[in-house]
Amino acid sequence: MTTSRRRFLQGVAATAAAGAIVPYVFTADAEERTQPRSKNDRLRIGAIGMRYQGSVIAEKALAHGDVVAICDVDRQIAEKARAQFGGKADLYEDYRKMLDRKDLDVVTIGTPDHWHTAISIDACLAGKDVYCEKPLTLTIDEGKRLVRVVRQTGRVLQVGSWQRSDHRFRLACEMVRAGRIGKLRRVLVTLGKNPRGGPFRVEPPPAHLNWDLWLGQTPSVPYIKERCHYTFRWWYEYSGGQMTDWGAHHMDIAQWGIGADDSGPVEIEGKAEFPNIPNGYNVATSFSARMRYANGVELIVEDEGRNGVMFEGERDHLFVNRGTIAGRPVDALKDDPFPREQFKLYPYDNLARPERMGKLDAIINHMGNFFDCVRDRQPPISDVVTQHRAASVCHLANIAMRLGRKLRWDPTGEVFVGDDEANGWLRREQRKPYQIRA
Image (cartoon, rainbow, N blue to C red; front, side):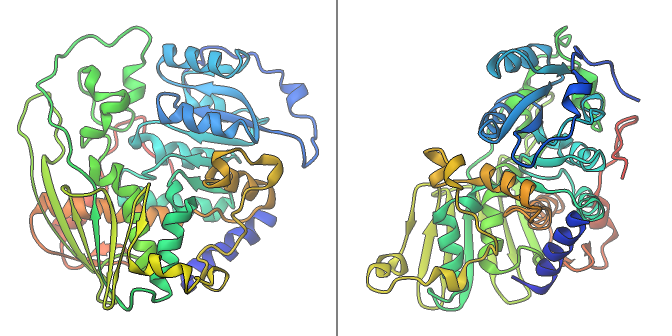
């Protein structure tokens, strides 16, 4: 680990040792639920944002605790989730009311991207540990704020960048860092294309959806059903297209292999074509970006080709994605085993504890790592620093694509060098009353 990341992990461990909307329903027996509990009691979970991945991560959390509170701005989704989790959880429309509860230990966040940082910050300030879906942020400025709050509060924050807990990706990064392909020269990341769509029909929001609350900090616009739920990804107001959707996973692995997962590139350039369709998806229809790091490594991002990450060294190359780790260095492992204990990149035990281990967790134990860290007060494998930096490199690529010119970046100060126009893209105007409060 680099010095600054090690210092952050040590600091977090040391620190840890030392106006809302009315909810749908509130039936918590607060007196019973706030009684002192032993360390071995099941933790109490509040699940926020229950569509798609939100319900998936809450389901995984059930191996380690009980979902006692559910929050979603769509009443139908909230009610379906309550039925999914046994029919007893209390329902909320506004997460801030949920966070007022003293009995919650952790929260899971599966909302659209533009809500991730605000909810994570508020949860940390409310004394909860957090499992948040990726990408961690909507802007680089949000990430800087969240890192500061996690440091101040000493909360455990795990991001759902679970590829770090997959043995293929971890082995690939450890082998690259150990020099198994020679000196690293270039990393090629392939994400896939953004879909096209629109124009879409404007209509009144359904009665079961609080559209204003869903929009949050983003501009107030008429309701279009394709703006929300899964397809929010293809609107720049709420996300960043494939660059932040797949990019939050693969760019994280790229930076981990480069050895810059607590830093970033020093130069970025990008090109893209953007649609001009009223009331239609507005992320790039084609894109590419090229970045250079201080150690000379080049990172190239493309939207066509085989999804995954290719590490190219002076001697050899290594490819990894969710089904494959391949290359001559991998083939050579049967005759020249890799001494992983000598080169492992995560300092704490990330293996599943037998009493908590399911079939999938035997290979990918990302949620288990989070709950182990909640109990032991150790930093998780996808901690706030690395995931802020992973999201940042995605945002940097999107900014360069929109400006269409080469940019110089100071990864220490987290500013563009001598470029006021580019620095104006580090944050976005936030609509009242939904501004991030830290």
